[in-house]
Image (cartoon, rainbow, N blue to C red):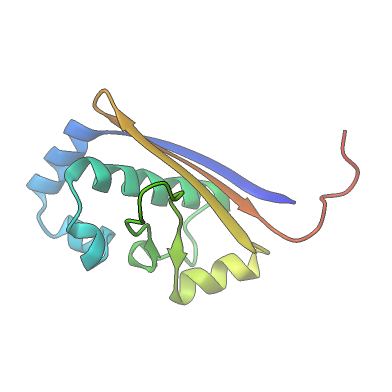
Length: 125
């Protein structure tokens, strides 16, 4: 059963200006591992976190640094690693699986998140 769907688009140049204008912002938003990635990848991860929050219907019980999108081996789909209170929030809302798609091109980064829970969601139409 689909619990939520979220999408977010980030203008990479604007994102870069925000990060450069507020150096501690990256520390508040990203894990140490994520902060080692190139800027376009950080922008995609920002979009991923926003997409997850949108799929949940809001940020109550969610901490940005408890949502990580680690760099995986080539040809592996991106995935969320969620810990702490944020993981408990997802579980409380019935989320058993998360799905994530990321892309960056033409100065934009985009993320699409799908949150899934047990059950078939009732009758299909």
